[in-house]
Image (cartoon, rainbow over all chains, first blue to last red):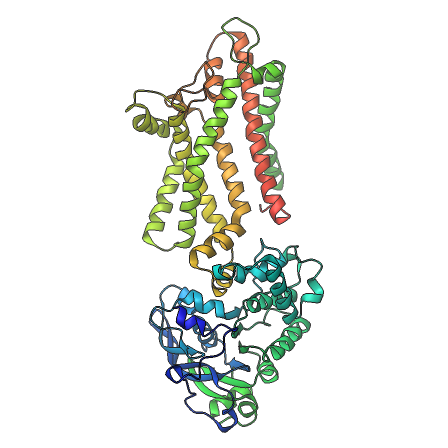
Length: 288
Length: 269
């Protein structure tokens, strides 16, 4: 359990290059020789009861880039995302088949704790989910406090809180009200607070499940800009059913249809020269 | 139709208003500092108080809460977390049955289990009977309060790497806490005035006692004893006792409302 999570820690040098745990993208493209994959799924299927929500998905998500997952409602894009931090299994009567490796560690490996995985793979949901009983500061620090090993002193925690809020572009707006309730913030601010909360544990990967769907255009734009900037420091996977958004923020885009990965290519390629006719119909608005 | 509902709404509050007015008229004159600090006097002797009964009632409430609150909140947490399981459905159903059980039956049960084997009435037996009455009340309000906490909050905590139990306690339970506190206080207020379960458990006591293993005085019992006697002085004392009891219940109810208000900024009702 520890072994697998150690690799995910940001502070440590990456161990992926050591020969024993080397991971390769199944089909390395010439433009990608430099970037090693961050997440590699192979033959990943996820079920609700007997129904498969996603089937045999094999893809490799590059590091420090934004990968968008698009597709019509019910195509399994959220399920795919929730398999990447083992949130899928929190719903009763679900199961996952296949494998997901993050930075070379199999997250569905025997003895791997989902809790440890989730501490290193942040997630933000469609609706803002600040904890209503906690202050802004406590919300940002919520993920730190739960990790018994990082019971850091107050000074260090407040530094981390500030850094996370800075990265989420919220610091200037809330720095004078850190001890007030998070519920006093606007919806857009609450969503950026949730991003700050996810960033505070310094994850290597952050998963965004339609993060702007419940926001007004102005706030949605702020979150979008934030996502664009995040690629410098973390690997971002974003689910969206807004194709323009995918085109604006992502480096690579995956198109899912009825639980299957139809096409996965660089965003430019997918939107300008899709290989699959189904992708073309979807992006030209013929269905969806 | 609107006129009828208006009338009904007024009539619904009428009993409380009448009772309060009557109690104040009959009982207020016997209320004095001595009533709270003195022991009951002998027959025919003026004055005297219900100090032992007031303390006894508070002790019984305390014992009942020690038993009823943890079990009730724990069971409510289980019902909310495992809502679909057969055990949860069974517990929920039995809890509703227990809630409808006549309080005198609860008294007989406590007598059978805690009084008869030791051949001794006790405060503990009374507290257990009241505590058992609290359990279903607290269980169901806790469950209801937990179920209104959005699933998205639970998911957010899990996604941050909270273990399941930690999610339940520090996020779900904490978010629902104000509602649970209110439910607990309502349950306390509900059992504070119970008489029947105490008749053959706590029994009542004319003397000062704070031992859980001895019979103990309680306001409802003292009111009952005084009210069925023929002495005018005791009748006045009974009215005063009733006024004190209803005041205690009122204070607890107000505290319940306050607990809700201060957490969320507005009452959840």
